[in-house]
Image 1 (tube, each protein chain N blue to C red):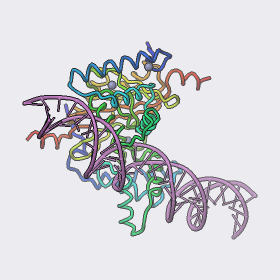
Image 2: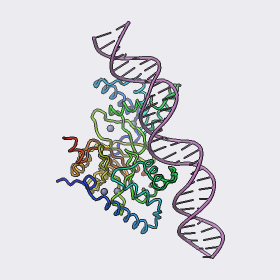
Image 3: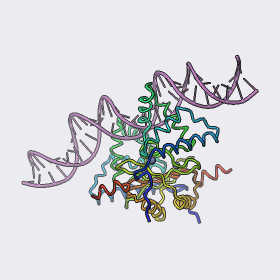
Image 4: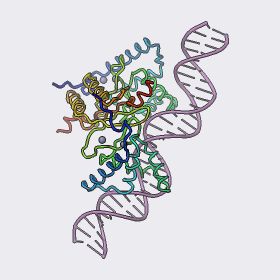
Length: 163
Length: 163
DNA sequence: CCAAAGATGTTACACTATAACCCTTTCTGT
DNA sequence: ACAGAAAGGGTTATAGTGTAACATCTTTGG
Ligand SMILES: [Zn+2]
Ligand SMILES: [Zn+2]
Ligand SMILES: [Zn+2]
Ligand SMILES: [Zn+2]
């Protein structure tokens, strides 16, 4: 049985954005973390699609949006905050950042990355976590965090390439 | 039942190096790939320990060893070759490279990374591969490659920190 | 030997990220 | 309200990682 994730299908992305921003405001409020206008703006830019964006792309868009010059530390500091709060993830294989759809609970970074369309989809699988923990334990290793990046073709791009 | 991997224990590392270089020569020979002196030297440098090394560290060591100036493309081209041949892996989370202990067969990059001592150990687990493939399949995703990086403490560093 | 392909040298540059310093805003306790 | 502390953000410069483009040298196969 297969179920194509939302981000791989056509969907009303405005709902993704609204949900992400609402969650972010709620969570930061609960935690006493300060979701400043700048940080919120960067989060919204990250959420413009499900494709991970690089820090310099975000910087350029910030500069365009605000008609002022924006230097790297500005965007990196915002990204650091968002990473700390678990509101975004970093995709190491792409040097890029993408919004987290379930920031309420901390979790490792597990992604399917379509090399054709660029969309990143987060996987949540207890089985996967278990398997990884089992393998670490078997080696006597104390696991602290982990990241999985799976590259390939999403259902859409796959059917295109089959044609 | 736990079994501490070799690289996390004291061991005769000369055997690791000899084995890696012998395998590399054999494989490249079989494949008609040219393991030139430079490439072999880079492979040997990568194998100086089980800790992933950055391209610029390797470049500096190359320069020191050969008493001539070495520019980035020199080491990156050698690394590209070694990656293509599956003789080394790239650790994305560290921007660093480490030798592969079983280059005979192509396989995904699955590592345990000790944040204290820096040692990287490759995991080979059919169960892990299966679980990852299952999760990809369930999303209708055509998997082409994957990389798992687990960060934590190796058995040694773990007991140090418990003390 | 010659031509073609492959490997390496060389220069310059692009992309990603952080250090250090300063000023402003916000919070905290009185 | 006030002073002092802490956090956020602007600015400049620089560190770290990786590639493009082109020249030169070496190996390979006829
Ligand atoms: Zn969406
Ligand atoms: Zn997430
Ligand atoms: Zn060893
Ligand atoms: Zn390997």
